[in-house]
Length: 73
Image (cartoon, rainbow, N blue to C red; front, side, top):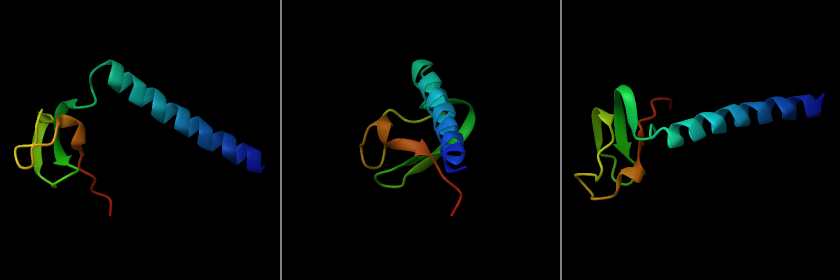
């Protein structure tokens, strides 16, 4: 029974990483079809846009430090 639970978790990991691979290969990590709220992981700057900025206008860190803002607390 425990191995069945582990297998289920690993299947979810596989699905998640395949989606990430698809996003990376399709250059969709920092560009979405609809506007989203992007947040800089360094300073907290946010903006609503389809694409993350190449450089944070507040702290100067690169695009790779932006993520979609999380709303679940």
